[in-house]
Image (cartoon, rainbow, N blue to C red; front, side, top):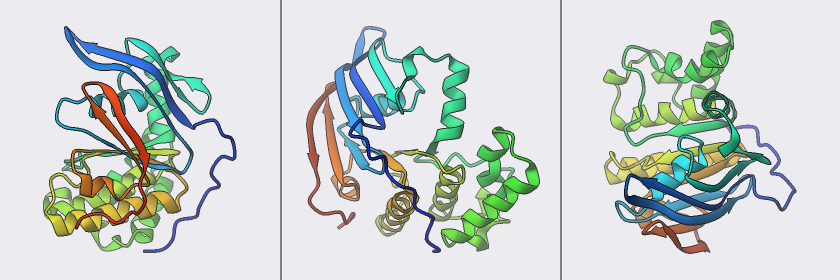
Length: 243
């Protein structure tokens, strides 16, 4: 894997991404009950909690996918709750990267086309987008997959391509929702190592949702969510992943 060019974390004490007392209900069900968190530029943060705790809902609010009922979500000094759906969508395309549990690659496209997709959606020409995609695949050590379709890849290979797609647009924040949840332990270890290493070397922040403490240990900080509230928020002494 060729090192990614690092970017300098913000020197400002103000968090790059933050929520302030956000609440959210799905009908009569309270998903978030007043959550305030701040995430610095270049920080790796795991959000952990049992099923139904609100951890994925918090990630969706942080990334602008959901708008909370109350409170605010700010990114780089801008209140996401005041943006239109279109503006939030453009923000996700240009400033955020996403890695999902099931990779969400497009089956009809080969790896390089899947990786190029975020660039194409922001108006980059096809030739340049594919060149950037090829470069990213090479830099994270999976250039041999460039012409394979997802159906011809293992789960671990597909997730590596998804990581390349998340990083190709040089995002400020990468959001990962159970990125190793569908993988066996050994492959999950390799994917988590690749994800945390490449995101850190790119100078981006990582916000990762998991129910597994072994996965959470790959990050430098752990926020535990229970019943829609922050139960604990602490720095992790050592990073190292699956045991």
